[in-house]
Structure formats: structure tokens, C-alpha cells
Length: 156
Image (cartoon, rainbow, N blue to C red; front, side):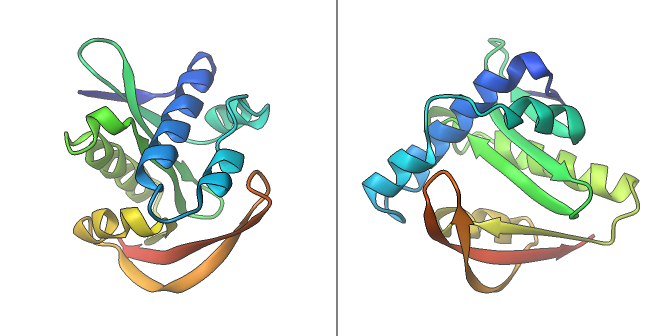
């Protein structure tokens, strides 16, 4: 598994990884209609802009297939979009992405990182040193409703 910076040409694959991860991983946390609204097949115009604006990383399998994503929102000092294709879950791709994002944050002099975790991913982030700061809701413009999540932080 190789970690590299995403390129604008990867936007469609990154969006697909996101959608597949949410549809599979969040199916026990959110209603089916919410997940369907939250994961439209059409790639939003902003996806390419996010890839260009932030340190956005992908895990590339030996086959050349992109299997995981994640990025550092430098302005907010937040971990975002850590997603893995369901068939690659548990193989370490998301851990490599998260380690790369943390290293990028340290290199930029950040002392703390935060993130909003879906319920199904909370234990993954805890294994990587993140601590829960409590529950909250996040308004998703795609789902057009509030989604339950867990706020987490990590001292670097």
C-alpha cells in the first residue's frame, strides 16, 4: 500500500470511496434514506477544489486501485474524509492515511487535531489516540438533516 497526494484527476475515485465507505460502514448508524441522500453518485464541484486546497492523501493498492482517502483541513486543524473501500477495511489503509495526516500536521507545527467521527468509526480513532469530547450533531447539506457524530481531539 502506497500513500500519495491526491490529484484533481482522482476526484471521482475519491468520491466513490467516500460513498462506498458511508453506505457500508454507516448502515447501522443512520437510516437508509439518510445515507442515500448523503451519498449522491454525482461528484460535487467542490471535490476537486478540496483536493487542490488541502493536503489530501490517497492509499493506492499494489494493483493501482485507490482504496482509502483522508485530508488535513489546515485552516481548521481537522482530520477530514478518512474513508476506505469496504473490501479493504481492516488492511491498514486508513491507518496509513491517518498517520500521514498526523505527520503533515506536526510538520506544519500544529499541536492539536480534531475530527467528527461517525459512531461506527469512533473505536478506530480511539486506537489512534483520539479522545472523545462528547456527542453533537452535524448538519449535512447533502442529507439535509442533522447527523449524530462524536467530536474527538488528539494532542500531537
